[in-house]
Length: 94
Image (tube, rainbow, N blue to C red; front, side):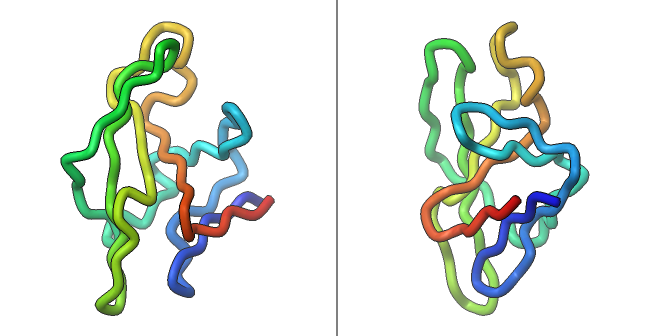
Protein backbone atom coordinates (compact mmCIF):
# COMPACT_ATOMS: atom_id res chain seq x y z
CA UNK A 1 0.00 0.00 0.00
CA UNK A 2 1.48 3.39 -0.93
CA UNK A 3 2.72 5.42 2.00
CA UNK A 4 4.23 8.92 2.37
CA UNK A 5 6.71 9.24 5.25
CA UNK A 6 8.49 12.35 6.47
CA UNK A 7 10.47 12.97 9.68
CA UNK A 8 9.61 9.42 10.84
CA UNK A 9 5.90 10.24 10.57
CA UNK A 10 3.39 8.61 8.23
CA UNK A 11 1.84 11.58 6.44
CA UNK A 12 -0.47 9.55 4.20
CA UNK A 13 -1.29 5.92 3.45
CA UNK A 14 -3.82 4.58 0.97
CA UNK A 15 -4.46 1.65 -1.35
CA UNK A 16 -6.38 3.99 -3.66
CA UNK A 17 -3.79 6.53 -4.79
CA UNK A 18 -3.93 7.93 -8.30
CA UNK A 19 -0.67 7.86 -10.28
CA UNK A 20 -0.02 10.97 -12.39
CA UNK A 21 3.34 11.77 -13.95
CA UNK A 22 5.11 9.35 -11.60
CA UNK A 23 3.55 10.79 -8.43
CA UNK A 24 1.16 9.05 -6.06
CA UNK A 25 -1.78 11.34 -5.33
CA UNK A 26 -3.29 10.36 -1.97
CA UNK A 27 -7.01 10.89 -1.29
CA UNK A 28 -7.70 13.64 1.23
CA UNK A 29 -9.22 11.20 3.73
CA UNK A 30 -5.89 9.33 3.91
CA UNK A 31 -3.87 12.43 4.84
CA UNK A 32 -2.85 13.15 8.42
CA UNK A 33 -3.75 16.82 8.22
CA UNK A 34 -2.25 17.65 11.61
CA UNK A 35 1.15 17.72 9.84
CA UNK A 36 0.04 20.10 7.05
CA UNK A 37 0.34 23.87 7.16
CA UNK A 38 -0.97 26.14 4.39
CA UNK A 39 1.64 27.70 2.13
CA UNK A 40 1.23 30.78 -0.06
CA UNK A 41 3.02 28.96 -2.91
CA UNK A 42 1.02 28.20 -6.04
CA UNK A 43 2.08 26.95 -9.46
CA UNK A 44 0.20 26.37 -12.68
CA UNK A 45 0.21 23.23 -14.80
CA UNK A 46 -1.15 23.64 -18.34
CA UNK A 47 -3.36 20.55 -18.14
CA UNK A 48 -3.98 20.09 -14.38
CA UNK A 49 -4.57 23.70 -13.34
CA UNK A 50 -3.43 25.64 -10.29
CA UNK A 51 -1.56 23.70 -7.60
CA UNK A 52 -1.65 24.86 -3.99
CA UNK A 53 1.20 23.82 -1.70
CA UNK A 54 1.47 22.76 1.93
CA UNK A 55 4.40 22.76 4.32
CA UNK A 56 4.90 19.76 6.58
CA UNK A 57 5.57 20.35 10.25
CA UNK A 58 6.34 17.89 13.06
CA UNK A 59 8.58 17.77 16.11
CA UNK A 60 9.86 21.30 15.52
CA UNK A 61 10.92 20.57 11.92
CA UNK A 62 9.49 21.83 8.64
CA UNK A 63 9.60 20.75 5.03
CA UNK A 64 8.51 23.81 3.07
CA UNK A 65 6.18 23.21 0.12
CA UNK A 66 6.65 19.43 0.38
CA UNK A 67 3.09 18.66 -0.70
CA UNK A 68 0.61 19.97 -3.22
CA UNK A 69 -2.97 19.54 -4.35
CA UNK A 70 -5.35 20.87 -6.99
CA UNK A 71 -8.51 22.22 -5.33
CA UNK A 72 -10.12 22.96 -8.70
CA UNK A 73 -8.33 20.88 -11.33
CA UNK A 74 -9.03 21.26 -15.02
CA UNK A 75 -11.33 18.70 -16.67
CA UNK A 76 -8.42 16.47 -17.72
CA UNK A 77 -7.30 16.12 -14.09
CA UNK A 78 -10.58 15.67 -12.25
CA UNK A 79 -9.33 12.29 -10.99
CA UNK A 80 -6.91 14.09 -8.62
CA UNK A 81 -9.41 16.51 -7.11
CA UNK A 82 -9.08 16.34 -3.30
CA UNK A 83 -5.82 14.36 -3.59
CA UNK A 84 -2.34 15.32 -2.31
CA UNK A 85 1.10 14.48 -3.73
CA UNK A 86 4.47 14.86 -2.02
CA UNK A 87 8.11 15.41 -2.95
CA UNK A 88 11.40 16.82 -1.67
CA UNK A 89 12.34 14.95 1.50
CA UNK A 90 9.10 12.95 1.72
CA UNK A 91 9.67 9.27 0.98
CA UNK A 92 6.80 7.69 -0.95
CA UNK A 93 6.81 3.90 -1.16
CA UNK A 94 4.53 1.45 -2.94
